[in-house]
Length: 319
Image 1 (tube, rainbow, N blue to C red):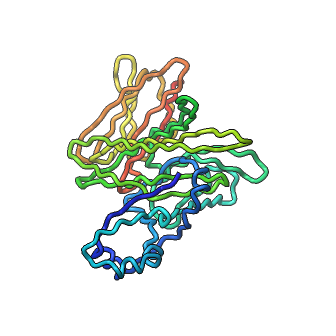
Image 2 (image 1 turned 90 degrees about the horizontal axis):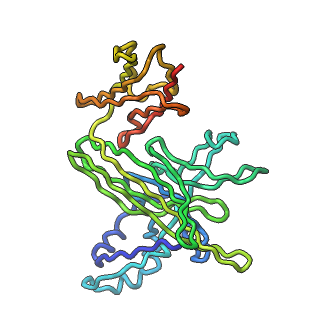
């Protein structure tokens, strides 16, 4: 699969770009079409800034005669396919064989990883692992079959923190090569705003083919990210443990983000009310009761960064 785009810009804009210099990312060339067709879509790299991987310097060097001969009134079309570059991920295993300890990043570019990649430790069998930042919630992965095409579909939700200003995210596709290398390419931008909140769903789907022993198989990859707009961040979580008469046995309070991984309820508790106090003074409440033969978890919001909220999961244990 080849990530290409066409830009239409007038000669004046091109000349202006030649007059400015800027910093460049540590990227590698996109490579041949044959190799790219073997790469599979595994997810996305979400950024708040545009990921500019277009090699303008190389393009200008290759088309200098066209630029000089242009009379200023002609509109030029740039087919930038061969000048689009890849930004490769680096994996710091922290001297550990446990994927939970690994740090995966795309150079110095700030962003949120969300992809389902295949890894392999030396001397061990390969395995797949979903890589996602704390900002990605409600993560799920499933296999979808349409005709003879099998697709791995990755879904998640990002609770974007609006704070009274417009929200902007760029969803950059992430691929993995047959050799296991992971890279991202420039994606599309999405703007979200609104006093009443709302949501935006972004889908990226691609198919690729692989031929082995003369047999060609088509595989699909898809990532679906839902952006939910949140206007305020949580301040405090309050838990009220109640008996069968709905009298409060005990009350616990936690700053948002500091909930424990497991809570053992007091004796005679029949239900738990979880209150979330938000910075605007509003309060939301949820009721939890014991489930027969099932574990009970509550999820509470907390601020993970200036642009998003995450969810913390806590198990409620009745004894």
